[in-house]
Image 1: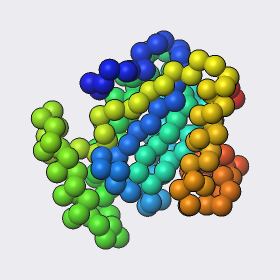
Image 2 (image 1 turned 180 degrees about the horizontal axis):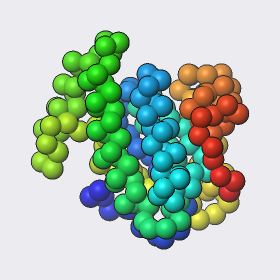
Image 3 (image 1 turned 90 degrees about the vertical axis):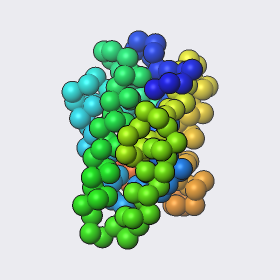
Image 4 (image 1 turned 120 degrees about the vertical axis):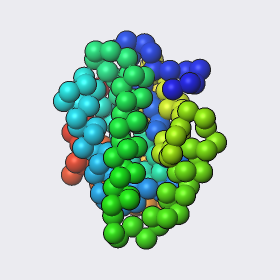
Length: 177
């Protein structure tokens, strides 16, 4: 991660955004969003990731989170690297993926624009970490996360969106702030 701002304050809580290159709508397919959930759960169980709020939108993910041991920036780097490989393989192997050729072309296109990527690039380089330092900022980011699917016109109420901490049936358990 070669950005100026990194999530490098030990045990600090951050608002982060992980964005698919070109804002490509990948997480419209359940199996790809479920892969993200599976990997977030792994990070919670094995990598000391604590998630307070989240939403998986079609082309990006917002998290309010912290890492209790180690740097969050390192965890995010590893998470993005691993999930990129997994999702790219799911796309390649998915016979129902009608956009397979176009998706793979786009991931190759973005990789060619960055020297450190070999064949494909799935995630944008930046995470835009914002350290949450006051209750006012925390509440603003919670509201933003929970309203994101409503603002995008995907659902009419925040609690209808399955891949969000606002949903009672959310597949990912979150911690209390």
